[in-house]
Image 1: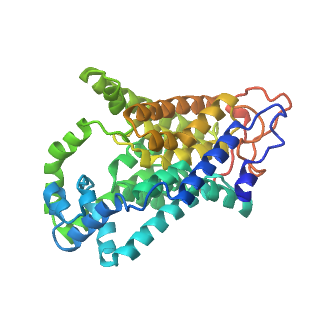
Image 2: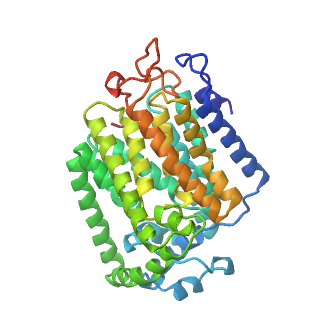
Length: 423
């Protein structure tokens, strides 16, 4: 844990009276995650990986359209997968069909290795430029984060999406083709890319938007060439019935405004208004953050982090296993800016929130976790717009903000931009 200690050590640019709340919170949450992993408390199930593997196998066998029939899909699953179904668009088969050609154990091992590697890569990139030790510290912190644990327990794709989104939004101007292709890959689970066009437009990354559109069309065309049109017709037909029914039911680990309103017992009017308000707030945050980045008023990584949080708020589907997006956002923001004690406490709660959701496993705990997301996003956004002078909260010395003797709140115009790993 020495590398994590390096990332989280006391920073000399922070006032002596400051308590490193966020650093302490991250360290404690990572320690809890490590205990869970060492004790095997999470169990040995392959979780949702069975669904990805089954979908790929059906596509490889020429029955991609059948994956959207719940009965046909579940017929090839073990009894503990009876609740699984397939809801992703057909171009996801392009990534999953090759997986079915591998032996089950090899495929599972590669999938889990990809989850761990993606989680670690998020930390290594989000901390920004700096020493190899600092990047290693970031990688270890994110690999041992509660968000990574949530994904590892259910074998989900949150770290893949978080890594792709972070790189794409960071590289939108300098590497627009890479950004567009990565975002097109993210549309294999469409809710992940929900806010990306807003962020790109705010940043004026029109070439990235064009690349995003063309690459998405390319993936769709490739899926039609490989699997035919039938899966797209099946996907469209299933959307209103299966997808609508799924969204209308209460799900313990689904963290959206609509779900939270329903769990609190509000009626259909609130259930309609809540997601509209969340979409508006998330889009406004992503737009404002990326416009501030474009104008030079906000460090690149902080802007990307706020845009990711806006996407988490606005997404029509956001699960506990998607929390890697929040993890990436928090590391990016905290390694770019100096935050108030309140914002640090909110960030620490945001980092640890999956432990509450996984540990309590109730509807009430999911409401609390969503409330944490909203409150932390608000405080972090406020901290970004009215930041304090001095070194970034998680900065080990590289890319620090301009220091001030009085450490009073100042305009972001007086804080130097922090170089992003890809910008």
